[in-house]
Image (cartoon, rainbow, N blue to C red):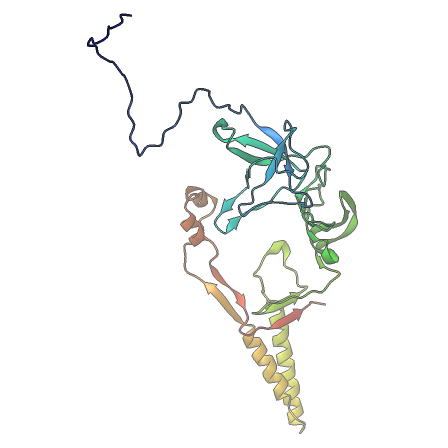
Length: 321
């Protein structure tokens, strides 16, 4: 390069790139960000003394198997969202994994800073609570205790059943083919039909009326409180009471008018219907298939009609025996 002498004239060249003052300056990325090439498993961690630990979004913290620096009681990661079967405003499903459970982690767009919990997996240290292959369902666990709630669907051939169980008070609702179940073991036959039982208190309440009956309704046919047989029994009783009352009055005895009036009123109160006849009736499977995506049509086509009811909150018990 030529060197200018003292007192001589020259020139200066410069090149620059301008940027608005309002735009934050960022150093150029000289190294590409690492990416995750697939899913990983990790173990849920909580602070010491906590079986479950979460925030208002039901997020959890995990420790990856390659993390050798985290100690017991440390939260080895950022908060991770948990994938749920359904999620919406004030509706959906929630299950928060607890300490020591194994979860599957994915990364959105392979970005290592955007982890997401896809679900949980059973391992040798966390066996499934039933493993016969016949039963499916859900089981929870009391935090800090041995209590639980469970819902079992048993698909054993010829022995289909459902059980909803709470260990508190050994409270159960058993439906279908009733057996004695202890943990994973299917025990002996206990009956068929349904059973609602508890070692604690129980109550059965129906504000508008309740009907107890042993009259046959095969295949779950008929209306909910179709008490036609009971009504016939009441009408027969009303006729007998009227005959006895007339006979007593003919022989100068006191008539049974009060009991007759009660039976007449009872028959009247039990002989009403409620519901609505408006709407479009269903036209069978073909019509349903053509309108399968129309939820408004599905609402209009079902749930309409008249059904028996009570004018007063009656309690009726009836049996053919």
